[in-house]
Image 1: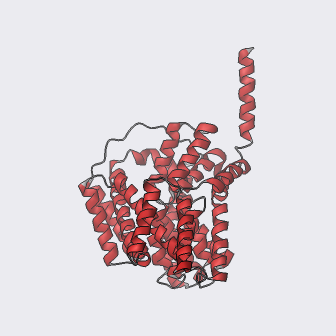
Image 2: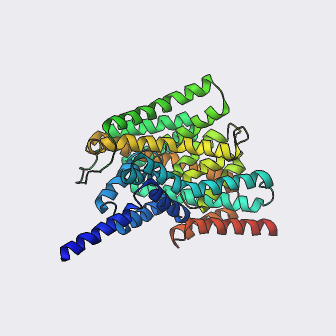
Image 3: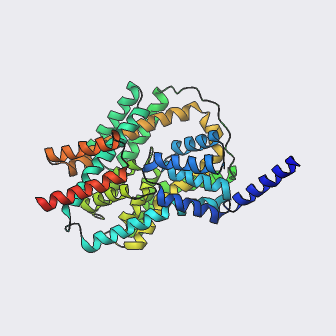
Length: 413
């Protein structure tokens, strides 16, 4: 009898969770997370673990850790890719799209509305707020450089790769130089770095065939190589924007902040978005929940060329996230083989060190150079850093406080 009751209870529990296993259920769960997940990629992964491992028990702790390892191995936004993979495992391809839309929609809408406000009222109305946002961007990127440097540049060789990458990117700026630096870092990793022995892990149960994975990876490479050529042959604005944002999404290793220098090089020198608007949007992106990559929606909506507004925001958002989708679907069937490959691990170690170098270069130019103009600015950056790293205040709170302080200082002086 007890056994029968237990089976009925389990059946009822399974039926209850079944309502959350279809695409609509996945969408609603991720929509709630998209509305409440402040604090950047590391915090998002902690929210996902609490929701899907501890509360809903969709997968084991170890399986979730392996899924996170895969998404950190791939270029792109690790937290969004983890969400896409969770949706994929629960409700197939429709679940992957539902998870992404739910998690991304709130911050994307907020960022496009903010862009509309900037376009309508301008930044001149509150220059102090803009300056406060620029200064907190320095602190946020500095925190990311420090945290990533400590975890990814663990010996003299990796520190050397990091410094070399930063120096090259500062000496010769440009998106293709960044691609070259990443490739060179991967080669240096294969030749020079000896990775540790692989640890035991659980296989990842995913509804993706090897054939579907191969198609997704082929499409990823074809778009990466073909979009720049298409943008030169057919110089339509929309195609140029898709090329720039797809490339940025495809080359981001190690978290959303690395997208800053790639997008800056794509939209500021071309005159698509002014430096002031770019930094205002970057500051605002820190203050909204959900993925930092929705900064792309702000930039698309702020374009000085057409399409802009809602159409431009949607186009750039889709373009920057498309590589994340293709890589998750493409890598899952081959992950078991790949993570046992010592050369792949060594290449990744080199790439990670190179990425920290890119971020270090971005911290100096454009972030520091455009924001810090005197001792008071340095003091404000230090205070924001202490708030983030010592007092452990949430980034959105530090961003809002910096904007208010900047506005008050602008009003007084």
